[in-house]
Image: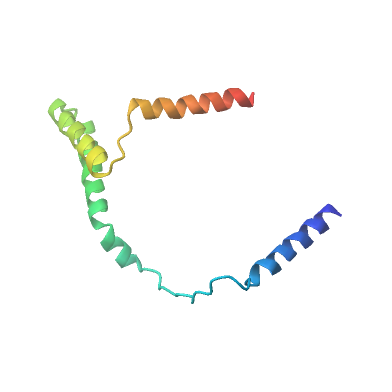
Length: 109
């Protein structure tokens, strides 16, 4: 019985949502073509290239075990993630996430 009521309520809501109200704005539908894969790749070519170069540098410095190369990778990481991408994660960010997860888990139990 409850399922039938829920189904009828959803159907009534959809029927009501499809009818425009008299005071609504009637904008014409704009059908923009979805960008092709080539257009998406062209727009993100710099980001993809920089990430590939950074990942290669990180892997080479890890497997070479060179201290100087690790410092170069550290500087590149700070410049790439901190300056270019503005996604540098600090200890404060990590503590905030883990602290929030711990508090949420403590409330759950």
